[in-house]
Image 1 (cartoon, helix red, strand yellow):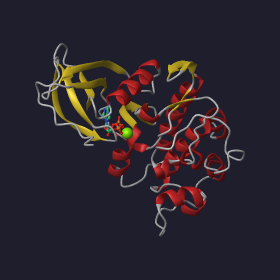
Image 2 (cartoon, rainbow, N blue to C red):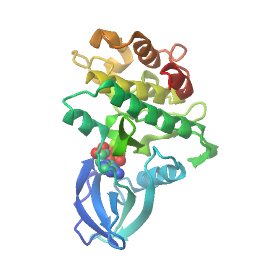
Image 3 (tube, rainbow, N blue to C red):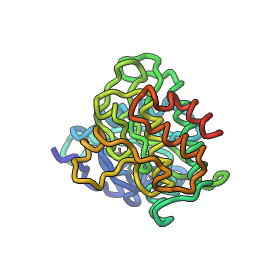
Length: 284
Ligand SMILES: Nc1ncnc2c1ncn2[C@@H]1O[C@H](COP(=O)(O)OP(=O)(O)O)[C@@H](O)[C@H]1O
Ligand SMILES: [Mg+2]
């Protein structure tokens, strides 16, 4: 199955001018658009009916219910007839002019300074605490918390300046799971993925790992596990422990290093138990 949508023309979405490509991911391509009515810039995620439309609708419905300053806003969801007579689906979201965090890390030479990394993490954890404690309609659950399940630099978007760094907006709830016992999730992004997720289990602690792995990456330029070994990446996640951050960054304050390492434990009983506990550990 070809999952990449045809590039839209400027006439493709009534009411919007499509300007350029912003990024690519699992479901398709995200485009910068401009709403004709008021000139507002938006990010448009667009898929063909048989290439993940139900996933895109699910993602938009979850995201739209999570109204928080550090979670992306959904502006509009719509469908339109495509050239082959089928249906295309699109979601227009708030546009983040700073791009994603991975792009920013690259622009800054591979890592961020401590103040900025902590500012991003503070905002990320606010968003996650909110999502975990929310009670939204998701899948078969009428009022459940949400586990993001794919926290990583590409899924953190950046707006304009905020105290100590850019404003962070969490996006891409495409893999999100309802927070109840037994929630399954095998997909995700291996360098930022907790072991239990690869084993098919998602918990709020799975996002604690993702957030800590993202912080580790911002500070060191590397994910917590060493994927540079002659092992398939899945086997690295299942068989290798994260490398203590002081091994990579010996001058990091020991209390901060301890908080990061605890949040990256493979064993759930030893890992920081919740986003709130991670916030407390980091002194937020
Ligand atoms: N609202 C937005 N503003 C700016 N860039 C965006 C926006 N949404 C997505 N992007 C870019 O597109 C990429 C893919 O978007 P994402 O929602 O993560 O889709 P996928 O599910 O395909 O990974 C992001 O990593 C980012 O670079
Ligand atoms: Mg993504």
